Image 1 (cartoon, rainbow, N blue to C red):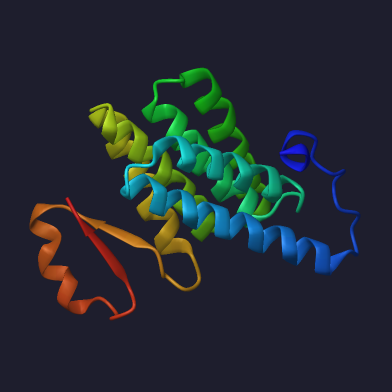
Image 2: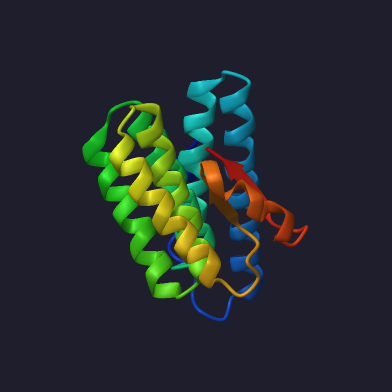
Length: 168
């Protein structure tokens, strides 16, 4: 409790082992939060998301920082805590843009769309999913979610096997 309440100072550049450790802890806590969500342990899940953000922030502006912040923002958005959600999502987007990785930015947009989906804000869901798809197609590996709607389903046959597909 003490460590999470009063986090250690940021890691000094060059401490690669410490950065790897904090990144791994952030990834593990993010994954644990996802499991907690689906097992209906919401309070524990939010605690894990908060821990993921704390550990990710210690790595500086990394992919873990962007994704952990977006996940926590998504959870707060579903709880209708818009001010906190907007601040964290802005942080996630800022880090994703600074990294210049369209795959991470696409993931952030997908998470932003997710909480809007839970509140039936369809225009924002469409806007963010379109942005996520555009960014995913720009990424080097194309290994993110491609969003297909209605008549686009014929294109699934022509897609590489490693793509994950979300059909709306």
